[in-house]
Amino acid sequence: MIIESLLDTDLYKFTMMQVALHHFPAAQVEYRFTCRTPGVLLAPHIEAIRGEIAHLCSLRFTEEELDYLRSLRFIKSDFIDFLGLFHLNARAVNVQPAVDATGRPTGGIDLRISGPWLHTILFEVPLLAIMEEVYYRGMQPAPDLAAGRQRLSDKISALQAPGFDGVRIADYGTRRRYSRIWHEEVLTRLKAGLGVQLAGTSNVMFAMRLGLTPLGTMAHEYLQACQALGPRLRDSQTFALETWAHEYRGDLGIALSDAYGLQAFLRDFDLYFCKLFDGARHDSGDPIAWAEAVIEHYRKHRIDPRTKTLIFSDALTVDRVVQLYRLFQDSAQLAFGIGTNLTHDLGYPAAQMVIKMTRCNGQPVAKISDSPGKNQVFDPAYVTYLRQVFQIPPETMLPETEPEGG
Image 1 (cartoon, one colour):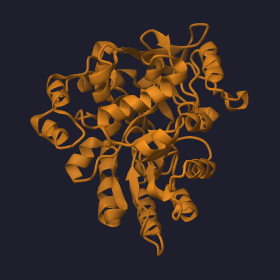
Image 2 (cartoon, helix red, strand yellow):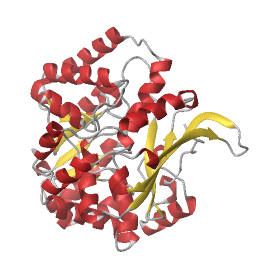
Image 3 (tube, helix red, strand yellow):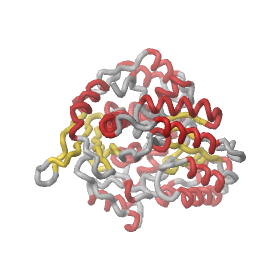
Image 4 (cartoon, one colour):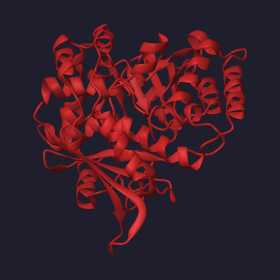
C-alpha cells in the first residue's frame, strides 16, 4: 500500500493538530479536493483510491513512532497520549465520480472531508500522496529513473558549487511525490550528497527513518480556521499568531505570510510580532518582491533583518534557490523548501492536486494568496467580504476557475 505509517505526512500537520487539541477541540471543518491541472482523470482510479483510504484508516501509531514524536521538544505529553488512541475514520471521507452541472461524468473525482478538525486534519497530505501515486502508476508506470537520478546529481552539484556552501535546503515534497519509494531514494541521495546543506524534511516518517530534522510550523488551513474561531474576522490573523505563540512559547517561530496577501500580513505583523517570531515563510507571489518588502518591514521597525529567517517554499527549483541566495544572502538568514522539483522530477510535470479547508464551524473560510492561481473560491460572496475586511485590492483577486472535481 502507498501509506504505511501515519507519520508519512508533513510535520506542520502535527503542530497544528496539537493547537487544535489544546485550543479548538470542538471545531468542525470541511475540506474539498481540487485538481488545478486540466485533463487529469482520476475517476478510473476511484476504487484503488478508496482501497488506499481504507488501508490508511486502519493504521495506528506504533510505540516507536510515539516515542519519536515525544522526543520533539515542542510536542506535549497529553498530545502523545491522544495520538496513542488515534485513528482516522473513513466515514469522514466521501469520494465520488465528479459530474458537471448537467449530471454528466467529467472523469474527475469529487472528494470531500468533514468532521472534527482534530480528527480530520491528518487526511490531507496522505490523501494527496495517494492520488498522485495511484494516478502516475497508471500514466507513467516505468519512468526514466536513470535520467531522474542524473538530474538529482546535477542539482546536488549545483548546490555544492563554490560560494554556495551556505545554502540550506529542505524537502517539502510529500504531497506531490511520484511515489513513496522514489521519495525515500531522493532523500537518501540528498543526505549523502549534501551533508549539512540538507536542513531536513517536512516528512516526519523519513525524518525518523533517515535521521533527518523534521521541519514545519503552520499551514494556510490554520489561519483559515481562525477566521471562524477568533473573536472577529479582522483580527483573525493576529489571533492565529497570538494563539500559536501561546502554544509554542518561542518554538516553531515562522509565520506564514500569504493567507491574505503580503500587504495584509505586514499590516498585522507589527513590532510585537516582528520580535516574537523568528521569521516568515513565502508561499505565493514574486519571491524577490516579497523578500525585499519583508526586509524593509523589519528595518522600518528597527530590527536587523540579518537576525531573522526568510523561508522560500513556492514552486522552487535549484536554479531559483541559487538566484535567491545570491540576492539575499547578506540581508537575512535564508532557508529553502523544495517540493515537486525534487520528489517528482522524472521527466513530466506533477499534477497540481490540492485539498483545502472550505468551512469551519459551519462558516465559509478562504485564503487570498499573492498568486491568483492559488486562490480557492468556493464562496465568492464570502471572498468579496474577506477582501473588503483585509483591504485587499480587487486586482489581486483574479480567482482560478474551479474544475468540477479533478
